[in-house]
Image (cartoon, rainbow, N blue to C red):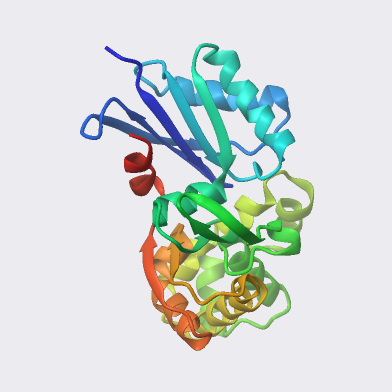
Length: 277
């Protein structure tokens, strides 16, 4: 049997993988996110080993798309972690933005959005990024992402700005004591994942006027800060859980700014498999 192709799409919270023997014979799963900006070399190796335990066969080729891999140094660190486990494999490491772009548009032209735990935007054509905006992380950017939504929710909660009915639901669903929030955000690792963990709550309550107003404003900020500066009105495609579950509001925001939301998928893997296999 020929060695299969391993495709990984890693966001801030989880890494989806597909071990492809052919287009029809595919094993799939997910492990915690593999983030080179949040993990040292040994942490990266441990994360890759965790992934390897899920695989039935060693891959002959690895195509990794991940957050934090925009620049050469972190991308090389991820590549070396895979080569330590699979020294004979062909390994390519790319940004999660390129993975999203190839997943949603293949070799067509368009604007690609990532809206998951974080957010990122690019203009893509023929499977390559022409221009990239956003992707500044949850401190400086991530407009319209799960971490951004969570930050808005917790800020409103701590400042007493949430409507009482939403406040009661939040307190029933989560431990949102000020000390707990500060511990998670400022002292523990992976604050982005913690903030993004509130996205399902907001999705469950997205019919609430406060949630709708907040989400629309953050999507408007995404278009103002990251999409409009691309200088084109090409169709927009989006991947990521926030874009998938809030697609109606995202579509309205796109229309408000003169764009068409043409494609939405929860994960780019469904497009990456035919791109590579």
